[in-house]
Image 1 (tube, protein in one colour):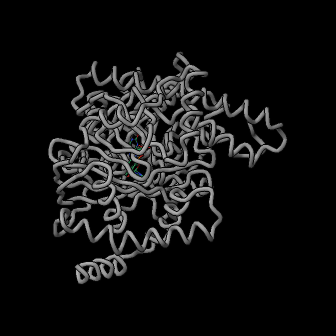
Image 2: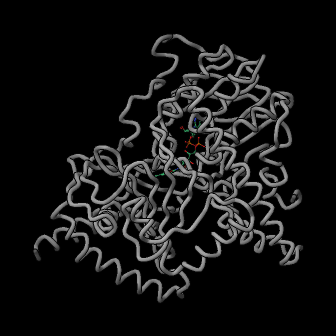
Image 3: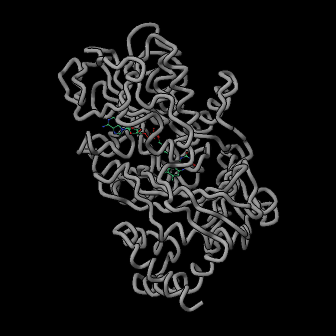
Length: 496
Ligand SMILES: Cc1cc2nc3c(=O)[nH]c(=O)nc-3n(C[C@H](O)[C@H](O)[C@H](O)COP(=O)(O)OP(=O)(O)OC[C@H]3O[C@@H](n4cnc5c(N)ncnc54)[C@H](O)[C@@H]3O)c2cc1C
């Protein structure tokens, strides 16, 4: 046993990469909140040593890794039907010189924009440009939950923290009131988004494994007051998707062992996120009004006054409107968004497994990781660490994190066997107030849907509908009022 331990510790230490050191800071802050930096560091070191010396070596008895472990996300084992579009059927296809709208990126937001354009535009061409394949970014690398967005209290909390830092011109009561306005606007749009998705899947007959059984979120034992406050706020404000459940109810729904009560999002669902994007794109491409070019990176967007020149490796396209749907990669094209769209790395792994007590078809978050179960195995992941802009979109998972998460699988679900075959990472983006941007990036016709703080499924479909509606001048409810959702809120001279 001593030899196994020594070998495991050596493997872990030799396998450490720069991101492990960055991520250690994230884990330190989230596992040991409210302590001073020295106490936090000491607690973390003790925890990490115990993890390496005792807990991780113990997983060797029931967990193994394929050789090699694939970096392909589990959702992308199914082949992207638009991997090389349109070149696989038209090898000499050329980009159009001029279109009405260019969409950059074909993830959840870009595919949704294409779908809504196909359904609503009576004239004008939309061209979607994607540097890799459809859903090759975070859309195809995620946990597979359709969220109801962040709950009201969470949004109020992050927006208020930002307002406290930046709006000394307002009184504390005014800042609190404004944070409530933001949270209400967000929840209203997210609830509508979730219903739009459910209706669209039903109406279009989209096959993406959609199952709506909710999402159990274990409360950190140190944060039970926060759970009570958040569910109380949900009741008081009428955004009642978020409720508290007992630890017995939590176990019954998810199979997760917790030390106390959990939060529960009633309307959340599970799905195959890449199949969702592919289906939206397939429907969109039935319309003459939508074209897609994958394997076509956009290098620059130039404002020519009455139009934009979109520079790609395949030539330049002129468009009256541009929709930036590149999410965490936004600062590549728009460096001025460096501190507005902050890429954060999250990772996941999948392995064939008995799954222990874990229940299928329901969203599950422990206090340190997320989990999900399908018919053959389990997916599990964690992390939310900022990476430099040039690392946005990279696939660079940490083996240390995966091995740590195996200990959580045992602790919370008594999994008795797993063979990890896939391990990957992606980046999501956070704005300074963790509130999304849906609307104009400039004063003209350059739009974006982004900054979704890891909740893209809760924002992208309704958000893309809003942007398409704005371009086409269509009527309808304004779910994304400019006052809250525009990027302008980060420019001091143009506060809401
Ligand atoms: C591990 C993990 C777990 C997650 N779990 C969940 C979850 O359960 N539920 C949930 O709602 N969200 C989850 N998320 C977040 C979610 O995946 C994102 O919010 C969502 O994918 C954002 O969609 P998007 O279309 O805006 O961005 P992306 O899916 O990242 O798409 C952006 C696209 O733009 C393309 N692109 C970038 N730059 C260029 C360029 N210059 N030219 C051309 N194309 C370009 C990229 O290749 C990419 O395809 C998770 C994310 C990760 C990484």
